[in-house]
Length: 102
Image (cartoon, rainbow, N blue to C red; front, side, top):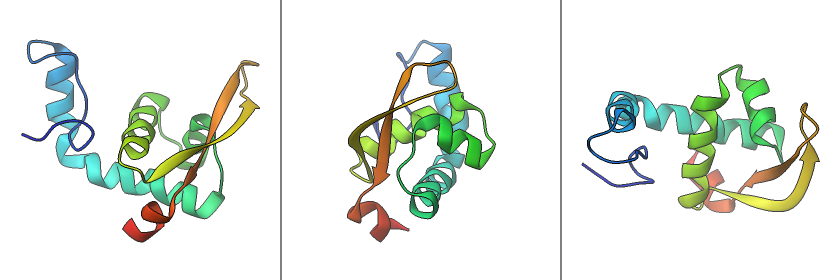
């Protein structure tokens, strides 16, 4: 088994999050590709904006964005935007390495 970010993260081998990571692992590359394509097609985005474009739950998108950042395929722009709850959200963008991976 590989380690994070190549394999979905979990909070220990005895946890339900480890079971969830194992369950989602076969689909992880396709999910990351969808998220990466959203950045390529729509530009600089917050996680909630990616969620809106892909029409998928935040709990499935947020970890993929974090993994893509760790892999160097997505990076922070340093910009913040207000999300629907009024909180500031970090804006991310695809990197040259991310574009090459598509």
